[in-house]
Amino acid sequence: MSDTEPTGWPANIRPEKTQDWDAFKESDSQAGIQVSDDFERFEQRNDMFSRSQWDEKIATKAALEFWHGHRKPKPRKGDGFRQRDFALRNASWVMASSIMERGFSDGLREGFTDDIRAFHPPDPNKVEVDDPAEMSREIKQISKYFGADLVGITEFDERWVYTSKFNIKTKQESPVELPEGLTSVIMVGHAMEYDIIKSMPSALASTAVGKGYSTEAAIVMHIAQYIRNLGYEAVGSMNDTSLTIPQAIKAGLGEYGRHNMLITKEFGPRVRVSKIFTNMPLVHDKPEKFGVTEFCDICRRCYDACPVDAITDGPPTDTGHNQSSLDHVVKWTTDCEKCFGYWTALKTDCAICMRICPYNKDFSKWYMRAARWLAGTKLRRVMLWLDVKLGYGERDTPQKWWSGGYQK
Image (cartoon, rainbow, N blue to C red; front, side, top):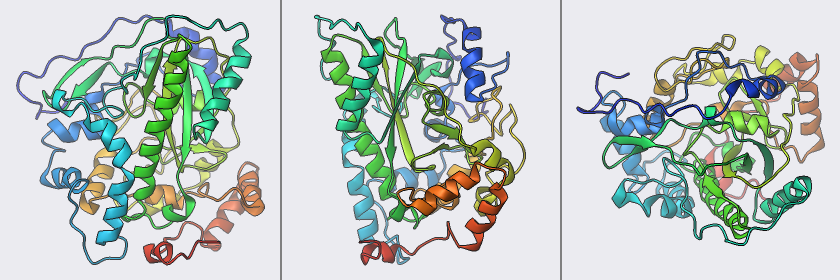
């Protein structure tokens, strides 16, 4: 706990455990997730973005300028940081920002600290689900129709739900309130463009992040309302309400990487993931392994490239660097304070680790799929050597994108 918390900061609210956490041990094992008996749920006020609002250690002048820059950026001469780059980046955020800001007067940030409010409540006439497997197929179909790139379904597991949500106006916390009887979480993946990510870090490349947020906000709202129209509870969620990656892994979307990001088979780490909590009867997917853990065990590309040494080069552990880390789950853990500090210095996203990751490939090409296959075999060191030798992950100039250098 920080020594700089506001006076009168309330004690954390520990809701009573309503689920038998031991019941998840089998699915944890299938997903390669190791949770210790000392595990405690995470407090949202301790994520880096929330801490930048109340913790004086994080809420520096640079951090405030970072947030201010998303509204009124200060362009500079460097390629990728000019007015047009910031103009495009901020335009990409319009949809997500519109949703996020509509509750600002009450201290709400929908999609970031608060779930997305329902357009209409569940229809009083509930459609009976006789075949959960068929309904699961239908949900995936309509999710793809609305624009989702990946969809998986997993069990509702309160371990990943935050103990509280953070109010940016009052700087206080309140319990996360979800409907009773939730049974499933629909995990939705949204790909970010390969070509523009290659110019990370830059304001131009951050457009992929903003567009990803805006896209997922719309898609989540569509899917959740469809479910409510059938008479079931559906809570649309982005960064808010719960941790995302453990549920995405269990839903079969991908594996966990050394850089603390989800690595998917289809898009590598270039994905945003959102979720819909529901009580609709659905069939749960199984985790899918394709060699990421074994590859990350030998790969240090993200570690070597991180300008502030925020990424570990050691094995996974169950302890983190600071209060923004999730403890008692065995995993690689990034030093979020170092990472966020570099973001604020740049005044935009970094994502060098995403760009340089050997799984950051255009898998529409057969030779990229061959590289992914090789990474999942005992010849993974060969793939890693080729990745470095052939220059994958090196930064492209933002001007290449602006000049149409990637257009076919």
